[in-house]
Image 1 (tube, helix red, strand yellow):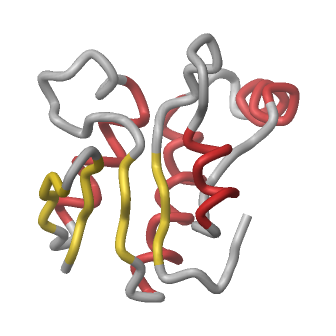
Image 2 (tube, helix red, strand yellow):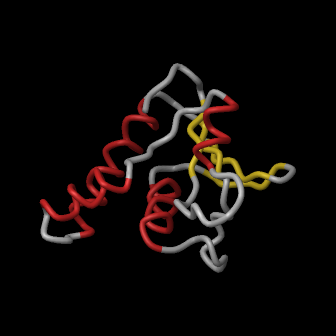
Image 3 (cartoon, one colour):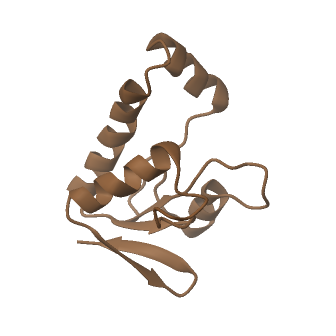
Length: 114
């Protein structure tokens, strides 16, 4: 999903807890990336389960957001030592840092700036 908002909200897809980054992004008018489970599974199947190929989709989205000079906000802790910073989320965080963003905690949320 794309919007004109100058912020991109990231989080994990843990739907077992109350609230989600998707709900928060919608409420706050932030841009966010989300694929429905069926769509994700179909895409994953089409690349024979290759997570590097799935990463290319997410990386493309990050590059699009960075090209628009978006600020990245994080719903879940982006600290590599945290329980929530795993899988593709960890890879997204590392990439955001690699392309020159600094991640800082502001209040109850983390934010990445260039």
